[in-house]
Length: 110
Image 1 (cartoon, rainbow, N blue to C red):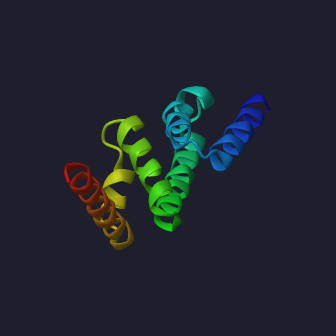
Image 2: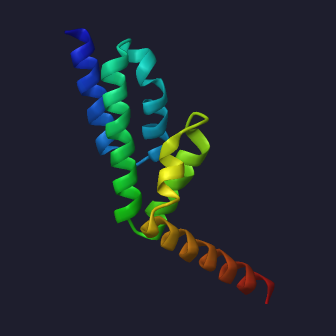
């Protein structure tokens, strides 16, 4: 019963939080908190789907926050980042982000 309550609290935090670093961190420690690999795997998959959907549907600012959190706080070997980077939507957003950064640098130089 206690694991069920803890899982419910974790899910509430994960899916309502807009601080994506915290979401990624919660995903990373879910296995230790729950002590149940089957449930932890399911939650981990749900979190990945949530982050992927958020990255794909968000504006560039939110997209960059999600991507940064995944890059900086995921455990090594995280497949979410690789899967995102093969998505046409994400590739387009990455290109727009790089173009915006380039224009920003050019504006600072001139």
